[in-house]
Image 1 (cartoon, one colour):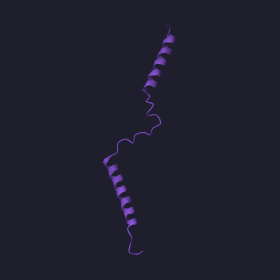
Image 2 (image 1 turned 180 degrees about the vertical axis):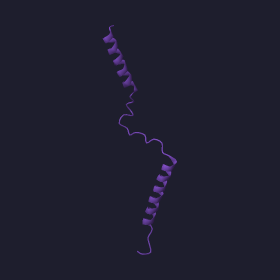
Image 3 (image 1 turned 180 degrees about the horizontal axis):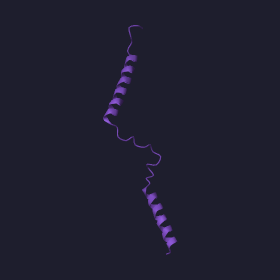
Image 4 (image 1 turned 120 degrees about the vertical axis):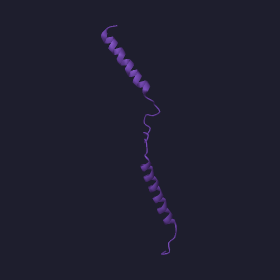
Length: 65
């Protein structure tokens, strides 16, 4: 096997190894959101609580009506 053939064989092995690494299930699916810090979770909880409170106020009849 000459030098050029060895290089071609090595390139082909690398390409095949790259294809083996690819997980077809994860292609096209949304990426993971990652770590959410305590501060970020607190902000999300506060925002959710405030929206629930506003929705609760809309449902209750007021005296002005």
